[in-house]
Image (cartoon, one colour):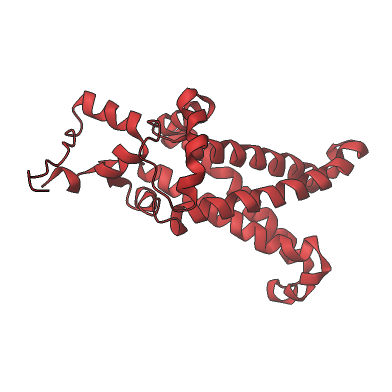
Length: 232
C-alpha cells in the first residue's frame, strides 16, 4: 500500500455516535421550535398532534441534545477532554490560519498555511461557538421549561437569549455543513466523522502538527515528496 493510500484513525466510534446524535437532536429541535417561535408555522401543529405534543417532543429532543457530552464522560472521556483542551488552546499559528483561510474558503489553494493541530483553528472556532450556543440554549431552555424555579427577571431574559442562541447556532451549523460537504477542499473530512479515519495526505495538508506527531510516534510513515524526472 502506498503512503498516499494510508489512512489514520481520527475519531472513535463514540465520538461519531455523539456527533450524529447531537446533530439529529439539533435539527429535531429546530423543526419542533418553528411553530412555537412564530405563527407562520402554525400549520405544523396538526402534523405533530397539536401544541402540547409538539412541546413534549421539543423537550424530549432537548434532553437528547444534552446527553452526548454526559455519556462521553463515561464511555470516552479521553476524546472529550482532548477536544476541550484543543478548543481552548490557541497559538500563533491559529491566528495566522485566519489570515490565510479566506482564500481557501472561497475555493483557492493556500500552499503556506501554518501547520495545524488535531483540530485546526477553524474547527476550534466552530467548537467555541457551538459550546457558547449550546450553553445559552440549554441554560435559557431550562428556565423556560421550569419557570416556577426562577425569578421573573431571569425568565424574561431567558426568551431573548434563547432566540439569539437559536439564530446564531443556525448560522454556525450552516457554515459547518458547507465546510464539511460543500467545500471542495474539506469534503474528505466527512470520512473522519463517518468511518473514523482520514487519508494520511489529508492529515498532512490540514493538520500538519498532528501529522508530525504521528510520524514522530511511528504510527504512520512520513510521506516523501514525489521526485520529478529531469525532463519534467
